[in-house]
Amino acid sequence: MRIAIAGSNSLAHWVAHFLADEGRHQFILLSRTAKPPLTARGWQVIIVNYGNQGNLIFNLAGIDVVVSTVTGNAQLALIDAALKAGVERFIPAEYGGSLTRRMPIDPLDRGQSVAISRLRQYESQGMAHTVFACGVLYERFCPGGLRLANVGQSSGASEEGDYIVNIRSMRAQVPYDASGRPAMISMTAARDVGHFIVAALDLPQRPREFRMRGDRMNASDLVRVAEVMRGTDFERAQHNSATLSDRLTLARTSHNEQETTRVHLLMATGEGRFDFDDANLNSLVDFTPVRFQDWLHTVWAGDLP
Image (cartoon, rainbow, N blue to C red; front, side, top):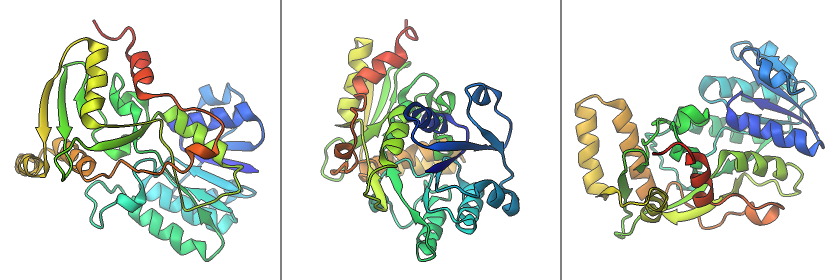
């Protein structure tokens, strides 16, 4: 099997890492610019122009599976080119909550719904697709957040402390669900998402959606993990749909786009967007993903007073 990995963020690196480690499949990395550190590892990096269909089709010739970590118009161009190049299966940049939990009008949509619609349209023309839902990436809670971790930045609110808990300032925003309980969250480390994707390539099952997770807990317990690590209680604010609606109105009135995205993320969490009961991929692969507590202690070691 020949794999094309589109993008050069850390998730793309992890997919390449596990493909290289297992050695069963050939792969290339598609990037807008040269990546000397990746070619130094012996990986083939091909510079592509997402605005040039001919260029994309040429570079996808002979590829069986595309793993995308690019979004927006670049991903749409990649989908079109993959169909024309005869790619058998496309894995879109949908590394978040299950599609079944997405609202019809989604304020967090960054072009994903258009991509999924196009992929469903292309199924009848012979190109299958599989979404890999992982819930919330652990990297939202690492030093520097998603931005420094170089993953998931298009999802918005990518700075350290933008989502639920600011470990450095010891403050937390805890979303509650409609029943008055702290919202449940499924979560996975980016490294394990890459491992899950590679492990699933050889499975006979090819559903429209695989769901995976490294851990599952409610938002209050998540904050408690951080509190235990820091050895003190955090300043907590509890939020239901009413308080978040008020906060959203204030953010919009002040034209604060980053705060608007932060509130939408908390609202989506309270609505169950980032949780699922059945992690259908976990039982099919032969490895154990890292638990959130262990991961958190590792990434913050030496970064706190």
